[in-house]
Amino acid sequence: MPEFDEEVDLLVGGSGAAAMSAAIAAKQQGLKVLIVESTGKWGGTTSISGGGLWFPNHPDMAKLGKQDSFEKALEYMDVCIGDVGPASSPERRRAYLETIPTVYNLFRSLGLKWALSADYPDYYPDRPGGMDGGRAIETEPFDSKRLGPWFEVARAKEQGVPLPLKTDDVWLMTRSWSTLQGFGRAAKVMGRTAKGVVTGKKLVGLGGAYSSGLMKIVRDLKIPVRLNTPITGLVKEDGVVVGATVSTPDGPRTIRARAGVMLGTGGFARNTAWREKYHGVPGYTSAPEGDLGTGIQVGIDAGADVALMDDAWWGASIPLPNGEALFVLNERSDPYSIMVDQSGRRFVNESASYIDVGHAMLERNREVPAIPSWLIMDARHRRKYLFNAAVTGLKPLKEAGIYVTAPTLETLAIKLDMEPGVLHETVKRFNGFCETGVDEDFDRGRTAYDNYYGDPGVKPNPNLGPIEKGPFHAVKLVPGDLGTKGGLLTDEHARVLDTDGNVIEGLYAAGNTTASVMGRTYPGAGSTIGPATVFGYLGGVHAATRVNAAASSR
Image (cartoon, rainbow, N blue to C red):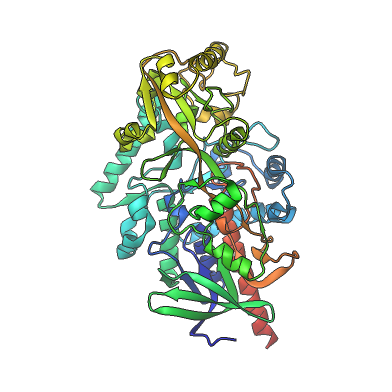
């Protein structure tokens, strides 16, 4: 056994939702907790995300006038996820749903201000147990001044949204200049922004608000956080994890952890070698730096099993000239647009959930070149709806051949190395669906989720607008992601399992470090951060029982 440089109850790796939730839960149980973050910025992927949590049957559902239940939510999860093995065992699904009210009320009691997304539907609202809104929640915009100088080292400071924006605003703001409802919501956000300025606040929204709210609780509870301190290995005694080694700016240290070690260190979205090995693509990710799979490797080195390593939280993205990727959401769902492979043919419901579109791109590419695919738009799409790439400027994309324009579809096809006749037939068939309102090929616009990012002014189907008015536009799309969803196998207490299915005592994990309870799908908005928060909490609570059991046995 090595000599320990210091001793705590629970050592937590990472500083996103999973890690901070675990730390808060353990501290509430009376444990001495230490958070160590591998990078120089705290907040993880959570801080640059949409900040939503999929929380079925949360305590404020009645305020929305909606009816939900544990049984209804479990039925929906069972139907959507199916059997994907122990990563989404019945026990883990039940633990997730049963714990949501407890976590919701605890964080609220500690100062977090929840906000409800009444209109955000489940991603499969037509399936048994699905709902057309109410299960997605988020937090109110957060005044970053409340964190003082600590916000200067927040990932949200440089990569987050410096506006008091909520996920529930985005769907309407994407059509701010084409619908009165969209214009009204944009005005509301501007008013919220102005009020913040007048009152001397520096408001942040989306994932920056949630991560900052959690960090405020962490600071209030006086839980120390050390940056640039990655966990590099685990210390085991008689098969039990009793501590970890960390790297620090002053050299390595070994920390004893009486209750255990929680790995909330993220996935491996930025690990190119692993992406090529498990996904067959280099990775076009929106996850931040430091998402290298180090926590997963630490777990594997300690005997942990892994699952779902070949999957991710996929979504169509624009590959930017600087090597980064820009996630695409409303652009592919709004009318007057289609997605086509490199032959010029449609292959997916463009308005489907982002993970389904990502899976479809990967599957199509096995038959026909579809990486990259192209999003084809007519002039009305670009004039009426938000196109996020335009916010940062289209000139570099045009120069790199990522964004292409042409006066006619025939010319556009030639520029894209497509057979003009094929693209013409694809568009002709699609335009026929726009007239009837029924997409006979891929059912686009059939569900409430499809319609969420549509235009209600377009009839008879808000997602189907004919492509017929030039100039015509095309932008490259690749299978990007919000992070990876494969990792360490864990049980309903967030305990890590070994390759024989047994618990590795003293080792916990949550978030993208683990194989997701959501399996290979995405039931609703916040299906990443929701489980990260809940299983982080469950791990922290269970770790406390180990300390209490040890104390009572003395």
